Image (cartoon, rainbow, N blue to C red; front, side, top):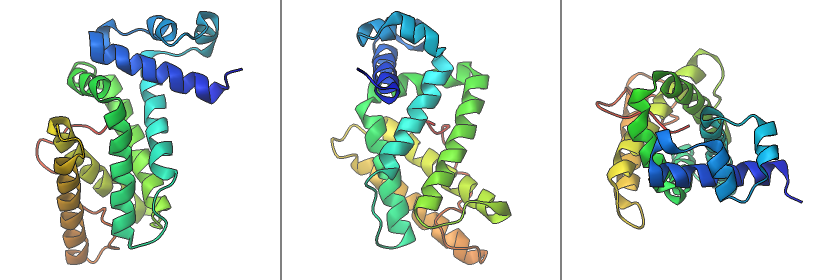
Length: 205
């Protein structure tokens, strides 16, 4: 029997396939559930919506980034590893994520929810790297790492390489800039004090 986690993962995967094939506006939970071979009654009972599926996608991306991430090395290396693991998860659902990114400007409410969720995700990444994400300084660290993530998303959306070379380079550059700014302003060097970068799209939660 399928567990709740397995049910959610299957529904999310099918929904993102649909978004990639038909566009966000033509993807629905019932169709995604049917595509995944899930029980429609259970899907209805779950109360899943497009927004909740997108939020669940972010949670799954976090879990993928945090599970098996590097536990040794510098803070910067651990942050780089987890951010790239998150991009590896996005890459598995690339067509759907790209469709969602194109749609977000048309749905400010969803974009805001995703921005808040992405900020929370950066807090989990920081904590996993050994950087406190609570308090005023933690809030600065989260916003800075979110800027790094958003800069990486911009590169990832255009990166057609199999090994995400351009994405890795963008994340590396953004983390370097974050470290430089942190050192300049005497903030804890958590690679998360970067200033917002121009024209960066909202991160995927």
